[in-house]
Length: 497
Image 1 (cartoon, rainbow, N blue to C red):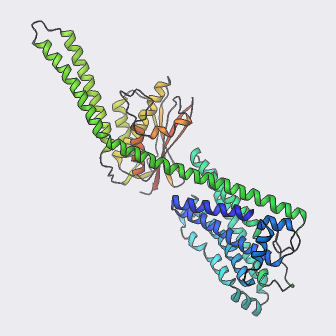
Image 2 (cartoon, rainbow, N blue to C red; image 1 turned 180 degrees about the vertical axis):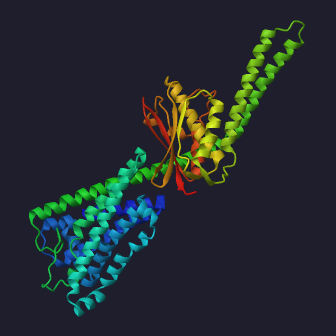
Image 3 (cartoon, rainbow, N blue to C red; image 1 turned 45 degrees about the horizontal axis):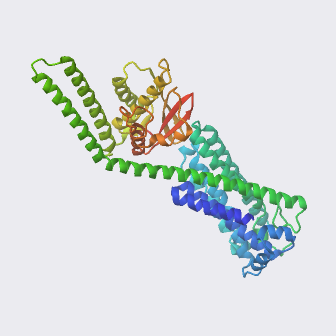
Protein backbone atom coordinates (compact mmCIF):
# COMPACT_ATOMS: atom_id res chain seq x y z
CA UNK A 1 0.00 0.00 0.00
CA UNK A 2 2.72 2.46 0.99
CA UNK A 3 4.79 1.53 -2.03
CA UNK A 4 1.74 2.30 -4.22
CA UNK A 5 1.37 5.75 -2.65
CA UNK A 6 5.03 6.54 -3.24
CA UNK A 7 4.76 5.23 -6.79
CA UNK A 8 1.81 7.54 -7.49
CA UNK A 9 3.74 10.51 -6.13
CA UNK A 10 6.71 9.58 -8.31
CA UNK A 11 4.49 9.34 -11.41
CA UNK A 12 2.83 12.68 -10.63
CA UNK A 13 6.22 14.35 -10.10
CA UNK A 14 7.31 13.11 -13.54
CA UNK A 15 4.20 14.72 -15.03
CA UNK A 16 4.96 18.00 -13.23
CA UNK A 17 8.54 17.96 -14.56
CA UNK A 18 7.30 17.35 -18.10
CA UNK A 19 4.87 20.24 -17.79
CA UNK A 20 6.95 22.82 -15.94
CA UNK A 21 10.54 21.91 -16.84
CA UNK A 22 12.09 23.96 -14.01
CA UNK A 23 14.52 23.28 -11.19
CA UNK A 24 11.86 22.97 -8.50
CA UNK A 25 10.06 20.24 -10.46
CA UNK A 26 13.38 18.43 -10.95
CA UNK A 27 14.07 18.59 -7.20
CA UNK A 28 10.56 17.27 -6.51
CA UNK A 29 11.23 14.32 -8.79
CA UNK A 30 14.52 13.78 -6.94
CA UNK A 31 12.75 13.71 -3.57
CA UNK A 32 10.10 11.25 -4.72
CA UNK A 33 12.77 9.08 -6.34
CA UNK A 34 14.88 9.17 -3.17
CA UNK A 35 11.97 8.02 -1.01
CA UNK A 36 11.18 5.31 -3.54
CA UNK A 37 14.80 4.07 -3.59
CA UNK A 38 15.07 4.16 0.19
CA UNK A 39 11.81 2.33 0.71
CA UNK A 40 12.67 -0.24 -1.97
CA UNK A 41 15.88 -1.03 -0.11
CA UNK A 42 13.98 -1.28 3.17
CA UNK A 43 11.39 -3.63 1.64
CA UNK A 44 14.09 -5.92 0.25
CA UNK A 45 15.82 -5.97 3.62
CA UNK A 46 12.58 -6.68 5.52
CA UNK A 47 11.73 -9.51 3.12
CA UNK A 48 15.13 -11.16 3.64
CA UNK A 49 15.27 -10.49 7.37
CA UNK A 50 11.80 -11.83 8.23
CA UNK A 51 10.30 -11.87 11.70
CA UNK A 52 7.18 -9.79 10.93
CA UNK A 53 3.52 -10.69 11.27
CA UNK A 54 1.50 -11.54 8.18
CA UNK A 55 -0.59 -8.35 8.60
CA UNK A 56 2.50 -6.17 8.40
CA UNK A 57 3.86 -8.14 5.45
CA UNK A 58 0.59 -7.82 3.56
CA UNK A 59 0.57 -4.08 4.29
CA UNK A 60 4.08 -3.74 2.89
CA UNK A 61 4.00 -6.25 0.01
CA UNK A 62 0.27 -6.61 -0.85
CA UNK A 63 0.64 -10.40 -0.70
CA UNK A 64 2.89 -13.07 0.81
CA UNK A 65 3.68 -14.31 -2.70
CA UNK A 66 5.17 -10.91 -3.57
CA UNK A 67 7.13 -10.99 -0.33
CA UNK A 68 8.58 -14.38 -1.26
CA UNK A 69 9.67 -13.13 -4.69
CA UNK A 70 11.46 -10.18 -3.15
CA UNK A 71 12.99 -12.38 -0.44
CA UNK A 72 14.79 -14.63 -2.93
CA UNK A 73 16.22 -11.86 -5.07
CA UNK A 74 20.01 -12.15 -5.44
CA UNK A 75 21.34 -9.02 -3.76
CA UNK A 76 23.98 -8.56 -1.03
CA UNK A 77 23.60 -6.75 2.28
CA UNK A 78 26.09 -4.16 1.09
CA UNK A 79 23.99 -3.40 -2.00
CA UNK A 80 20.79 -3.20 0.05
CA UNK A 81 22.42 -0.90 2.59
CA UNK A 82 23.82 1.43 -0.04
CA UNK A 83 20.43 1.59 -1.79
CA UNK A 84 18.95 2.76 1.51
CA UNK A 85 21.85 5.18 1.97
CA UNK A 86 21.30 6.76 -1.46
CA UNK A 87 17.65 7.48 -0.70
CA UNK A 88 18.39 8.50 2.88
CA UNK A 89 21.07 11.08 2.06
CA UNK A 90 19.74 12.49 -1.21
CA UNK A 91 16.24 13.33 0.04
CA UNK A 92 17.32 16.08 2.49
CA UNK A 93 19.61 17.52 -0.18
CA UNK A 94 16.79 17.83 -2.73
CA UNK A 95 14.49 19.20 -0.01
CA UNK A 96 16.96 21.90 1.01
CA UNK A 97 17.71 22.82 -2.60
CA UNK A 98 13.96 23.24 -3.18
CA UNK A 99 13.59 25.42 -0.09
CA UNK A 100 16.56 27.58 -1.11
CA UNK A 101 15.11 28.01 -4.61
CA UNK A 102 11.75 29.16 -3.25
CA UNK A 103 13.08 31.28 -0.39
CA UNK A 104 13.24 35.05 -0.80
CA UNK A 105 14.99 35.56 2.56
CA UNK A 106 17.72 38.23 2.12
CA UNK A 107 20.56 36.02 3.45
CA UNK A 108 19.62 33.29 0.98
CA UNK A 109 19.39 35.67 -1.98
CA UNK A 110 22.69 37.37 -1.08
CA UNK A 111 24.57 34.06 -0.94
CA UNK A 112 23.66 31.96 -4.01
CA UNK A 113 26.61 29.66 -3.27
CA UNK A 114 24.62 28.15 -0.40
CA UNK A 115 23.05 25.80 -2.96
CA UNK A 116 26.52 24.52 -3.82
CA UNK A 117 27.64 24.23 -0.21
CA UNK A 118 24.53 22.16 0.57
CA UNK A 119 25.87 19.39 -1.67
CA UNK A 120 29.05 18.87 0.37
CA UNK A 121 27.68 16.90 3.35
CA UNK A 122 25.50 14.48 1.30
CA UNK A 123 28.34 13.89 -1.19
CA UNK A 124 30.91 13.19 1.53
CA UNK A 125 28.46 10.96 3.42
CA UNK A 126 27.63 8.90 0.33
CA UNK A 127 31.33 8.38 -0.30
CA UNK A 128 31.88 7.30 3.28
CA UNK A 129 28.91 4.90 3.10
CA UNK A 130 30.23 3.00 0.10
CA UNK A 131 30.35 -0.49 1.70
CA UNK A 132 34.05 -1.06 1.09
CA UNK A 133 34.99 2.44 2.30
CA UNK A 134 32.76 2.19 5.36
CA UNK A 135 34.15 -1.17 6.42
CA UNK A 136 37.73 -0.01 5.88
CA UNK A 137 37.24 3.11 8.01
CA UNK A 138 35.36 1.45 10.86
CA UNK A 139 37.68 -1.57 10.95
CA UNK A 140 40.74 0.68 11.16
CA UNK A 141 39.20 3.04 13.75
CA UNK A 142 36.17 1.41 15.48
CA UNK A 143 35.28 4.67 17.26
CA UNK A 144 34.48 6.21 13.87
CA UNK A 145 31.39 4.00 13.60
CA UNK A 146 29.40 5.94 16.15
CA UNK A 147 30.80 9.31 14.99
CA UNK A 148 29.74 8.70 11.37
CA UNK A 149 26.28 7.48 12.33
CA UNK A 150 25.55 10.34 14.75
CA UNK A 151 26.92 13.02 12.41
CA UNK A 152 24.88 11.75 9.47
CA UNK A 153 21.66 11.72 11.48
CA UNK A 154 22.28 15.22 12.87
CA UNK A 155 22.84 16.85 9.49
CA UNK A 156 19.75 15.06 8.11
CA UNK A 157 17.61 16.59 10.86
CA UNK A 158 19.27 19.98 10.32
CA UNK A 159 18.60 19.93 6.56
CA UNK A 160 14.95 18.94 7.02
CA UNK A 161 14.41 21.46 9.83
CA UNK A 162 16.00 24.38 7.96
CA UNK A 163 14.09 23.48 4.79
CA UNK A 164 10.70 23.46 6.50
CA UNK A 165 11.53 26.68 8.36
CA UNK A 166 12.38 28.45 5.09
CA UNK A 167 9.23 27.12 3.39
CA UNK A 168 6.90 28.13 6.23
CA UNK A 169 8.55 31.54 6.45
CA UNK A 170 8.04 32.03 2.72
CA UNK A 171 4.40 30.96 2.89
CA UNK A 172 3.71 33.48 5.67
CA UNK A 173 5.45 36.26 3.70
CA UNK A 174 3.24 35.90 0.59
CA UNK A 175 0.41 38.45 0.57
CA UNK A 176 -1.27 37.72 -2.79
CA UNK A 177 -3.94 35.12 -2.07
CA UNK A 178 -3.75 33.26 -5.37
CA UNK A 179 0.03 32.92 -5.01
CA UNK A 180 -0.28 31.91 -1.35
CA UNK A 181 -2.78 29.17 -2.16
CA UNK A 182 -0.50 27.69 -4.80
CA UNK A 183 2.54 27.86 -2.53
CA UNK A 184 0.70 26.26 0.40
CA UNK A 185 0.06 23.24 -1.86
CA UNK A 186 3.82 23.00 -2.34
CA UNK A 187 4.51 23.33 1.41
CA UNK A 188 1.94 20.65 2.32
CA UNK A 189 3.39 18.34 -0.33
CA UNK A 190 6.96 18.77 0.94
CA UNK A 191 5.87 18.45 4.58
CA UNK A 192 4.03 15.19 3.79
CA UNK A 193 7.05 13.81 1.92
CA UNK A 194 9.29 14.82 4.80
CA UNK A 195 7.02 13.12 7.32
CA UNK A 196 7.05 9.92 5.27
CA UNK A 197 10.83 10.15 4.96
CA UNK A 198 11.43 10.80 8.67
CA UNK A 199 9.30 7.81 9.59
CA UNK A 200 11.83 5.46 8.01
CA UNK A 201 15.12 7.37 8.06
CA UNK A 202 15.82 6.96 11.78
CA UNK A 203 17.90 3.83 11.42
CA UNK A 204 21.30 3.99 9.84
CA UNK A 205 22.18 1.88 6.76
CA UNK A 206 25.31 0.81 8.63
CA UNK A 207 23.19 -1.66 10.57
CA UNK A 208 22.38 -3.37 7.28
CA UNK A 209 26.10 -3.62 6.56
CA UNK A 210 26.71 -4.95 10.09
CA UNK A 211 23.56 -6.99 10.43
CA UNK A 212 25.41 -9.99 11.85
CA UNK A 213 27.29 -7.89 14.42
CA UNK A 214 25.14 -7.69 17.51
CA UNK A 215 27.56 -5.45 19.41
CA UNK A 216 25.98 -2.34 17.91
CA UNK A 217 22.26 -1.56 18.13
CA UNK A 218 21.06 1.94 17.18
CA UNK A 219 17.35 2.50 16.72
CA UNK A 220 15.71 5.88 16.29
CA UNK A 221 11.93 5.97 16.44
CA UNK A 222 9.97 3.35 14.50
CA UNK A 223 12.74 1.21 13.07
CA UNK A 224 12.60 -1.30 10.26
CA UNK A 225 15.24 -3.36 12.11
CA UNK A 226 12.98 -4.01 15.09
CA UNK A 227 12.30 -7.73 15.32
CA UNK A 228 8.65 -7.50 16.35
CA UNK A 229 7.04 -4.06 16.45
CA UNK A 230 4.36 -3.62 19.08
CA UNK A 231 0.72 -3.09 18.16
CA UNK A 232 1.14 0.61 18.89
CA UNK A 233 4.15 0.74 16.59
CA UNK A 234 2.25 -1.08 13.85
CA UNK A 235 -0.75 1.28 14.17
CA UNK A 236 1.60 4.26 14.06
CA UNK A 237 3.26 2.85 10.97
CA UNK A 238 -0.05 2.43 9.16
CA UNK A 239 -1.69 5.71 10.25
CA UNK A 240 1.32 8.00 9.72
CA UNK A 241 2.20 6.35 6.41
CA UNK A 242 -1.34 6.67 5.06
CA UNK A 243 -1.75 10.26 6.30
CA UNK A 244 1.59 11.41 4.89
CA UNK A 245 1.11 9.51 1.66
CA UNK A 246 -2.46 10.74 1.25
CA UNK A 247 -1.51 14.36 1.94
CA UNK A 248 1.39 14.08 -0.45
CA UNK A 249 -0.74 12.60 -3.22
CA UNK A 250 -3.52 15.15 -2.68
CA UNK A 251 -1.20 18.16 -2.68
CA UNK A 252 0.77 16.89 -5.65
CA UNK A 253 -2.41 16.29 -7.64
CA UNK A 254 -3.63 19.78 -6.72
CA UNK A 255 -0.27 21.24 -7.72
CA UNK A 256 -0.34 19.28 -10.99
CA UNK A 257 -3.92 20.39 -11.63
CA UNK A 258 -2.94 24.04 -11.16
CA UNK A 259 -0.04 23.54 -13.56
CA UNK A 260 -2.28 21.88 -16.15
CA UNK A 261 -4.90 24.61 -15.80
CA UNK A 262 -2.32 27.37 -16.25
CA UNK A 263 -0.79 25.67 -19.29
CA UNK A 264 -4.21 24.87 -20.75
CA UNK A 265 -5.30 28.45 -20.19
CA UNK A 266 -2.21 29.81 -21.97
CA UNK A 267 -2.63 27.38 -24.86
CA UNK A 268 -6.32 28.19 -25.11
CA UNK A 269 -5.68 31.91 -25.17
CA UNK A 270 -2.97 31.48 -27.79
CA UNK A 271 -5.36 29.53 -29.98
CA UNK A 272 -8.03 32.16 -29.51
CA UNK A 273 -5.61 34.89 -30.40
CA UNK A 274 -4.66 32.96 -33.54
CA UNK A 275 -8.35 33.01 -34.36
CA UNK A 276 -8.38 36.73 -33.58
CA UNK A 277 -5.49 37.31 -35.97
CA UNK A 278 -7.19 35.24 -38.62
CA UNK A 279 -10.37 37.16 -37.92
CA UNK A 280 -8.63 40.43 -38.71
CA UNK A 281 -9.63 39.93 -42.34
CA UNK A 282 -13.21 39.44 -41.20
CA UNK A 283 -12.90 42.63 -39.20
CA UNK A 284 -11.63 44.49 -42.26
CA UNK A 285 -14.69 43.22 -44.10
CA UNK A 286 -16.94 44.58 -41.36
CA UNK A 287 -15.15 47.93 -41.59
CA UNK A 288 -15.87 47.88 -45.31
CA UNK A 289 -19.55 47.33 -44.56
CA UNK A 290 -19.51 50.23 -42.10
CA UNK A 291 -17.81 52.44 -44.68
CA UNK A 292 -20.53 51.51 -47.13
CA UNK A 293 -23.08 52.63 -44.55
CA UNK A 294 -21.16 55.89 -44.23
CA UNK A 295 -21.33 56.26 -47.99
CA UNK A 296 -25.11 55.98 -47.76
CA UNK A 297 -25.13 58.77 -45.16
CA UNK A 298 -22.87 60.83 -47.40
CA UNK A 299 -25.26 60.26 -50.31
CA UNK A 300 -28.21 61.44 -48.22
CA UNK A 301 -26.29 64.55 -47.25
CA UNK A 302 -25.41 65.32 -50.85
CA UNK A 303 -29.00 64.79 -51.95
CA UNK A 304 -30.23 67.25 -49.36
CA UNK A 305 -27.59 69.79 -50.24
CA UNK A 306 -28.42 69.48 -53.95
CA UNK A 307 -32.12 70.06 -53.36
CA UNK A 308 -33.65 73.52 -53.71
CA UNK A 309 -34.73 73.61 -50.03
CA UNK A 310 -32.36 71.34 -48.06
CA UNK A 311 -33.59 69.99 -44.73
CA UNK A 312 -30.78 71.18 -42.48
CA UNK A 313 -32.03 69.21 -39.47
CA UNK A 314 -31.76 66.00 -41.49
CA UNK A 315 -28.31 67.02 -42.72
CA UNK A 316 -27.17 67.67 -39.15
CA UNK A 317 -28.54 64.29 -38.05
CA UNK A 318 -26.67 62.53 -40.85
CA UNK A 319 -23.47 64.42 -40.07
CA UNK A 320 -23.77 63.52 -36.38
CA UNK A 321 -24.33 59.87 -37.25
CA UNK A 322 -21.40 59.96 -39.66
CA UNK A 323 -19.15 61.51 -37.01
CA UNK A 324 -20.14 58.88 -34.43
CA UNK A 325 -19.47 56.06 -36.90
CA UNK A 326 -16.06 57.46 -37.80
CA UNK A 327 -14.99 57.85 -34.17
CA UNK A 328 -16.12 54.31 -33.40
CA UNK A 329 -14.19 52.97 -36.39
CA UNK A 330 -11.05 54.84 -35.39
CA UNK A 331 -11.11 53.63 -31.79
CA UNK A 332 -11.76 50.05 -32.83
CA UNK A 333 -9.04 50.14 -35.47
CA UNK A 334 -6.48 51.49 -33.00
CA UNK A 335 -7.33 48.85 -30.39
CA UNK A 336 -7.15 46.02 -32.91
CA UNK A 337 -3.90 47.37 -34.33
CA UNK A 338 -2.29 47.48 -30.88
CA UNK A 339 -3.32 43.88 -30.32
CA UNK A 340 -2.32 42.26 -33.59
CA UNK A 341 0.79 44.27 -34.45
CA UNK A 342 4.29 42.93 -33.88
CA UNK A 343 4.90 42.00 -30.26
CA UNK A 344 8.56 43.08 -30.29
CA UNK A 345 9.43 44.92 -27.07
CA UNK A 346 12.69 46.44 -25.91
CA UNK A 347 13.25 45.74 -22.23
CA UNK A 348 15.43 48.24 -20.37
CA UNK A 349 15.68 49.13 -16.65
CA UNK A 350 13.14 51.87 -15.95
CA UNK A 351 11.99 53.38 -12.67
CA UNK A 352 8.43 53.06 -11.52
CA UNK A 353 8.27 56.86 -11.48
CA UNK A 354 8.61 56.88 -15.29
CA UNK A 355 6.02 54.13 -15.64
CA UNK A 356 3.62 56.02 -13.37
CA UNK A 357 3.99 59.32 -15.25
CA UNK A 358 3.38 57.75 -18.68
CA UNK A 359 0.43 55.69 -17.43
CA UNK A 360 -1.32 58.61 -15.73
CA UNK A 361 -0.93 60.84 -18.81
CA UNK A 362 -2.75 58.27 -20.93
CA UNK A 363 -5.39 57.67 -18.29
CA UNK A 364 -6.02 61.41 -17.84
CA UNK A 365 -6.61 61.88 -21.56
CA UNK A 366 -9.56 59.48 -21.43
CA UNK A 367 -10.86 60.27 -17.94
CA UNK A 368 -9.57 63.71 -16.93
CA UNK A 369 -11.92 63.90 -13.93
CA UNK A 370 -11.34 60.35 -12.65
CA UNK A 371 -10.11 59.78 -9.11
CA UNK A 372 -6.82 57.87 -9.13
CA UNK A 373 -4.47 57.30 -6.20
CA UNK A 374 -0.95 56.03 -6.85
CA UNK A 375 1.63 54.68 -4.46
CA UNK A 376 4.57 53.53 -6.57
CA UNK A 377 8.02 53.39 -5.03
CA UNK A 378 10.22 55.63 -7.25
CA UNK A 379 13.31 53.76 -6.03
CA UNK A 380 12.14 50.51 -7.60
CA UNK A 381 13.13 49.55 -11.13
CA UNK A 382 11.64 47.05 -13.55
CA UNK A 383 12.92 45.64 -16.82
CA UNK A 384 10.30 46.98 -19.19
CA UNK A 385 9.28 48.78 -22.35
CA UNK A 386 7.67 51.89 -20.87
CA UNK A 387 5.19 52.39 -23.70
CA UNK A 388 3.92 48.80 -23.63
CA UNK A 389 3.84 48.45 -19.85
CA UNK A 390 2.09 51.80 -19.44
CA UNK A 391 -0.46 50.71 -22.04
CA UNK A 392 -1.23 47.58 -19.99
CA UNK A 393 -1.59 49.59 -16.77
CA UNK A 394 -3.72 52.16 -18.60
CA UNK A 395 -6.11 49.40 -19.68
CA UNK A 396 -6.31 48.09 -16.10
CA UNK A 397 -6.92 51.57 -14.66
CA UNK A 398 -9.59 52.24 -17.27
CA UNK A 399 -11.37 48.99 -16.43
CA UNK A 400 -11.08 49.76 -12.73
CA UNK A 401 -12.54 53.26 -13.01
CA UNK A 402 -15.38 52.04 -15.23
CA UNK A 403 -16.07 49.32 -12.64
CA UNK A 404 -16.30 52.01 -9.95
CA UNK A 405 -18.70 54.04 -12.10
CA UNK A 406 -20.91 51.04 -12.87
CA UNK A 407 -21.13 50.30 -9.14
CA UNK A 408 -22.09 53.91 -8.37
CA UNK A 409 -18.79 54.64 -6.64
CA UNK A 410 -17.68 57.71 -8.59
CA UNK A 411 -16.49 59.22 -5.30
CA UNK A 412 -14.02 56.39 -4.70
CA UNK A 413 -10.63 56.27 -6.41
CA UNK A 414 -9.02 53.52 -8.41
CA UNK A 415 -5.60 52.73 -6.94
CA UNK A 416 -2.20 51.87 -8.43
CA UNK A 417 0.16 50.39 -5.82
CA UNK A 418 3.63 48.82 -5.91
CA UNK A 419 5.31 46.34 -3.57
CA UNK A 420 7.94 43.62 -3.54
CA UNK A 421 6.67 40.03 -3.48
CA UNK A 422 9.20 37.19 -3.53
CA UNK A 423 10.99 37.34 -6.92
CA UNK A 424 8.57 39.92 -8.28
CA UNK A 425 7.91 43.62 -8.26
CA UNK A 426 4.13 43.75 -8.09
CA UNK A 427 2.00 46.56 -9.51
CA UNK A 428 -1.54 46.30 -8.16
CA UNK A 429 -4.54 48.03 -9.74
CA UNK A 430 -7.42 47.99 -7.27
CA UNK A 431 -11.02 49.14 -7.77
CA UNK A 432 -14.18 49.14 -5.65
CA UNK A 433 -16.61 47.95 -8.28
CA UNK A 434 -19.13 45.14 -8.18
CA UNK A 435 -16.40 42.48 -8.50
CA UNK A 436 -16.05 39.53 -10.84
CA UNK A 437 -17.67 36.15 -10.25
CA UNK A 438 -15.25 33.24 -9.92
CA UNK A 439 -16.77 31.56 -12.99
CA UNK A 440 -15.85 34.60 -15.10
CA UNK A 441 -12.36 35.25 -13.75
CA UNK A 442 -10.70 33.04 -16.35
CA UNK A 443 -12.91 34.24 -19.20
CA UNK A 444 -12.04 37.91 -18.78
CA UNK A 445 -8.62 37.42 -20.41
CA UNK A 446 -10.11 35.90 -23.57
CA UNK A 447 -10.04 38.06 -26.70
CA UNK A 448 -13.41 39.65 -27.55
CA UNK A 449 -14.92 38.67 -24.19
CA UNK A 450 -16.66 41.61 -22.52
CA UNK A 451 -19.56 42.22 -20.17
CA UNK A 452 -19.83 45.85 -21.35
CA UNK A 453 -21.58 47.41 -24.32
CA UNK A 454 -20.07 45.61 -27.32
CA UNK A 455 -20.50 48.72 -29.49
CA UNK A 456 -17.83 50.52 -27.50
CA UNK A 457 -15.88 47.72 -25.82
CA UNK A 458 -14.42 44.90 -27.86
CA UNK A 459 -13.16 42.89 -24.91
CA UNK A 460 -9.53 43.08 -26.06
CA UNK A 461 -8.18 45.28 -23.26
CA UNK A 462 -7.43 42.62 -20.63
CA UNK A 463 -6.10 40.19 -23.18
CA UNK A 464 -3.89 42.94 -24.59
CA UNK A 465 -2.65 43.70 -21.06
CA UNK A 466 -1.96 40.06 -20.35
CA UNK A 467 0.07 39.63 -23.53
CA UNK A 468 2.13 42.71 -22.68
CA UNK A 469 2.88 41.39 -19.19
CA UNK A 470 3.90 37.99 -20.58
CA UNK A 471 6.19 39.77 -23.06
CA UNK A 472 7.83 41.31 -19.97
CA UNK A 473 8.43 37.79 -18.55
CA UNK A 474 5.81 38.44 -15.91
CA UNK A 475 2.37 37.27 -14.83
CA UNK A 476 -1.04 38.93 -14.59
CA UNK A 477 -3.21 37.70 -11.74
CA UNK A 478 -6.67 38.69 -10.57
CA UNK A 479 -8.39 38.55 -7.18
CA UNK A 480 -12.00 39.60 -6.85
CA UNK A 481 -14.75 39.48 -4.27
CA UNK A 482 -18.26 40.12 -5.63
CA UNK A 483 -19.61 43.30 -4.10
CA UNK A 484 -16.23 44.44 -2.75
CA UNK A 485 -14.06 45.09 -5.80
CA UNK A 486 -11.24 43.63 -7.83
CA UNK A 487 -7.44 43.71 -7.78
CA UNK A 488 -5.22 42.98 -10.77
CA UNK A 489 -1.58 42.13 -10.02
CA UNK A 490 1.09 42.79 -12.65
CA UNK A 491 3.98 40.62 -11.40
CA UNK A 492 7.30 41.53 -13.02
CA UNK A 493 10.69 39.95 -12.24
CA UNK A 494 12.76 42.01 -9.83
CA UNK A 495 15.39 44.23 -11.40
CA UNK A 496 18.30 46.11 -9.90
CA UNK A 497 19.10 49.50 -11.49
